[in-house]
Image (cartoon, rainbow, N blue to C red; front, side):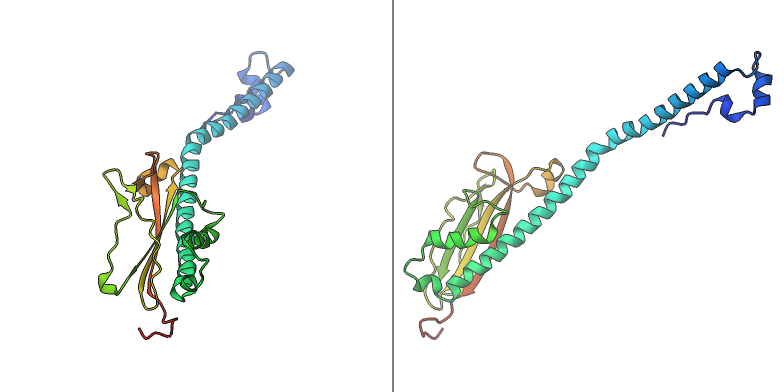
Length: 215
């Protein structure tokens, strides 16, 4: 805050003003004194607006960064929960036993679990692979290339059979908007070459012996 000293009419008594003012205390001098005091108070109030103008960009940038970081963690939780629910349909044999169940139907299950927080578009990639046992599990990295682009080949759909080991993975390209979180959240490049954050979730399990089979 600006430290504006009060005028003499605020700090002196009437007798002191008369002794210090050759013409004595007049109505015009009092009026001028009041006008000066009002201007001084207005100048002091304006300093708060100037200080806020310096602090506001940093404050709002930090607020936006906190909001986006929390939103990313919530999106991670939402995607993992959707993957777990959809993967149970494979583990219990419901996807294998339903002739109408397909790759698109399984993707729809995950899309229903993440909407409306995340869009079910090209940003979402679902990969399902099956193996004979845990020792034979082999999977590719989601990012490839020097720029860290999402591996478009991760779109398999193999639900296996009873007692098969299945790995379900889902990847979502999250665009980062907060400038203050760029260095902390950027870990990939999207299809357009823009920096983004990869949200990934996975579920690994052995299918239940739903076909009266002993695992």
